[in-house]
Image (cartoon, rainbow, N blue to C red; front, side, top):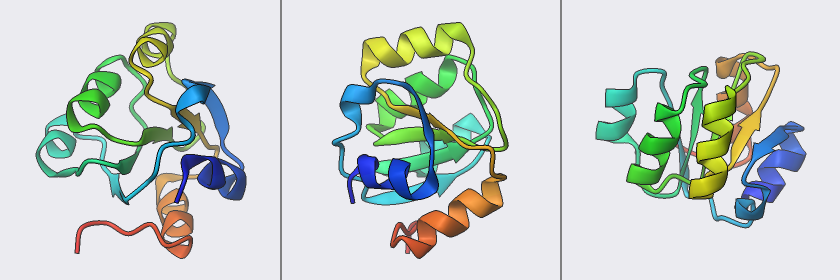
Length: 114
């Protein structure tokens, strides 16, 4: 499923790298612990977190993630947005809590590791 559909279905706000919304999402991962995401996420995953600092872009780039959803009304800081634009990593925001975002992704057919 393309990121554009996820943005539409979950009514997400695109904060960075709008040009990357044509990426295919292959699965999902939710965690706020960066080392956990580094060790366990997979290429093409959409990552759900509440972290908004620039290191999330580095992790998403390293793991070749499809994009990042900041849940619970969290907003990325300016350095994060700049780095995301440079690296082409879509950052999306939702006012919904992480649990609800993940549930809606699951309902759309985005699953974690199985």
